[in-house]
Image 1 (spheres, one colour):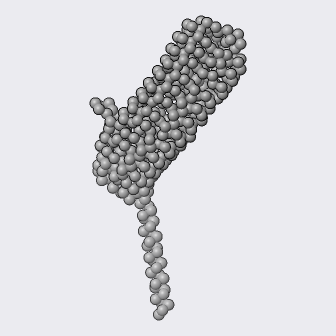
Image 2 (tube, rainbow, N blue to C red; image 1 turned 135 degrees about the horizontal axis):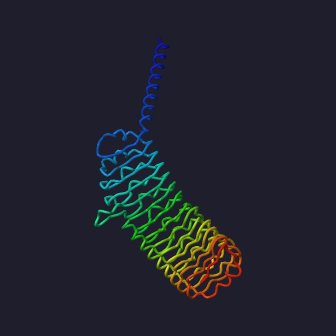
Image 3 (cartoon, one colour; image 1 turned 60 degrees about the vertical axis):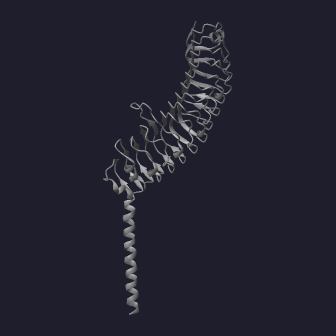
Length: 375
C-alpha cells in the first residue's frame, strides 16, 4: 500500500514538473515577437506587452501617441529598425527597458518631444542613429534640450547624425559613447557651444562638424587618432581653432572651409598621413599654414584656396609624398616655406593668383611635377 502511494506520488510530481516545463516553454515562446509592427492608437498589437524582444522593424508613425508607444514597455531588444516619426509623442518613458536595437534608430519629430528620457537603458545600436527635427511648418520650432536619455549608449554601428536641434547647447548624455562605425555628423545646431561630452569617443569612420554657429572649438574629440574617411569642418561661425584634434594622426581627407573666425590649425600638430586630400579654403581670419612637423604623406592634393588673410605657408620639413599642390587666390599670401623632402609631385603643381607672392623659385627648380603652372 505504501509503495502504491509512493508510486502515485512520484507520478503526480512528474506530471506536475512536465506541466511546469510546458507552461514555461509557452511563456518563453511569447517573449519573442516576430514581424513588422506599425504602431498607432489601435490595440491590434496588444500582444507586444508579453514580449521582451521583437524580431523585425517597429514604426511609431505620425498618427501614434504615447498610448501606442506603451505597447513596447517590456521590450529589451529590437532586432530590426526603430523609427519614431510622430508629432504626438511627448515622452519615451515606455522604452525604459530597451537595451539594444540591431538596426537603425531614427527619431524625427515636430517639437512635441524635448528630451530622450526613457532611453536610459539603451547601450547598443547596430545601425544608424539619427536625431532630427522636421520644422518646415513651424513658426517657432522646438528641439531636444539635452541628450541625457542616451547616458548608457556605448556603441553605434552606423552613422550618428545630430541635426537641427535649435535649443541644444551641449552633448551632455553621450559621455559613455565609445564607437561610431560610420560618420559623426553634428550639423545646424545654432545654440551648440561645446561637444566635450564626446571625450570618451575612441573611434569613428568620419566626422562632419558643419553650420554650428556658436561652437568655438572641437574639444571632446581628443580620443580620435585615426579616421578612415573625411574630417569635414565647415561654416562654423564662431570656431576659433581645431583644438580637440591634437591626437589625430591619419584620415582619408581633411577639409576645413568657410570658418570665418578660425585663427590657427595647431590642433593638427600630430597629423602624419592623409590617403586623399587636404583642403583649406575660405577661412578668412587664418593668417598662416603652420609647420606640421609630423606630416609625411598626402596621397591626393594639398589645396590652399581663397583664405583672404593668409600671409604665410610655413616649411613642411617631413612632407615627402604629395599627389598635387594647388595654392590659389590667397590675396595676402607673400611667403611659402620649403618642402625639403619633396622632390616629385605626381599630378599638377599650381601656384596662381596670389598677388603678393613673388618668389616661386623653390618649387620651380627643385620639385618635378606632371605639369606646373605659375603666375
